[in-house]
Image (tube, rainbow, N blue to C red; front, side):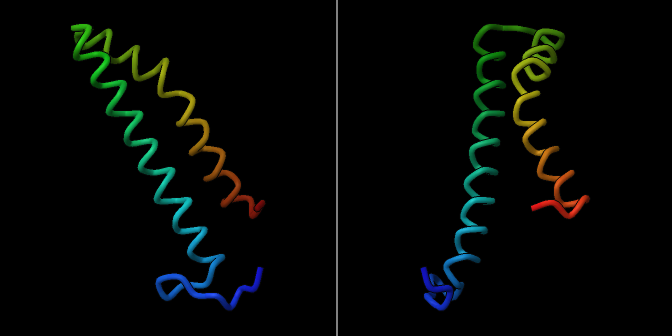
Length: 76
């Protein structure tokens, strides 16, 4: 695909990179809302909510940490 094609004033590659970051951020925020709602609906309390966020949130925390480590080491 040619890099000179423009979408909303960005090249295709730039648009793809921005869309990926926005989409993943939205997905992670939605997962945080789901975990919070699950704790609220089940009346988990403060301690139970903490364990819900630790247990269910560790997956996307690892995903974000992987991206940060790749940026710091220059691996892409």
